Image (cartoon, rainbow, N blue to C red; front, side):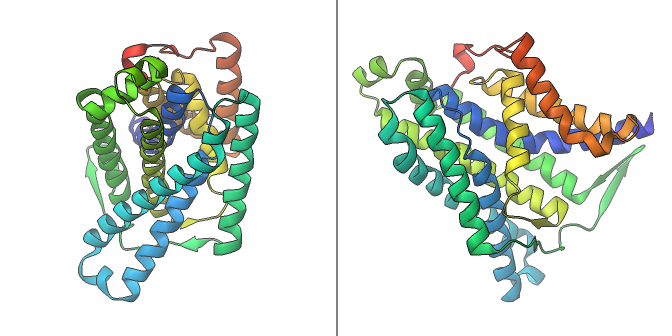
Length: 305
């Protein structure tokens, strides 16, 4: 039982990361019905921006005196950078094709993903970049479960960001405009809502969440790599589909379920760790075959962005 609880905690930790990335997929799909395959690259860009900023602050000596403040600054600046990057990508790669066929926009998304990934490789190199290790030490024991400092940070920040997103979407005028645009762009425009601005903001919010996830993964695993966005991006996409793409709560649920299956399979199935990435793809295929609308359904309007 102790082993199960520890693995359950590991699943929650990983699920938080997947949920943050999956929300970007589901928000963009909800508002313009686009599978943004470049979204995983925002996750990688956030991880890189985090390590660059933290390394710079460490070289100036600030990490020794104010490590948590440095982390907060790096997190905020990385989220802001990826938000602006996503808005630029939307302007360049998606907005001109808004009246084109879905296939054209899909190809544009794939091309942008390749472009961003190769841009990271050319500017940052092909080797891993190591994160500072100030946050990797320390843990607390609660009964049979040991929670490391990084796991606590990931869970705490994930819950904070998910609650903040929930508040923005369901309790603010911006969120109301986002939901109105996702339901009917023409009617929302007649009420004075600037659909173009709302779409850009949606891309920005999704990319900011992915950037936060990128930093958390970099801190947790100790390094980042230029192609780190591909596999987590596919898993997050699977999570969004599993929960019901276009549905915010579905993306959160799907992220935690995918991670839990992955962790439990690695823990309890012989050689499961070697094939843990396969389970996300199996789930994606099964959902598309048996329940294409996902667990919570694709068109739950109250929870759709």
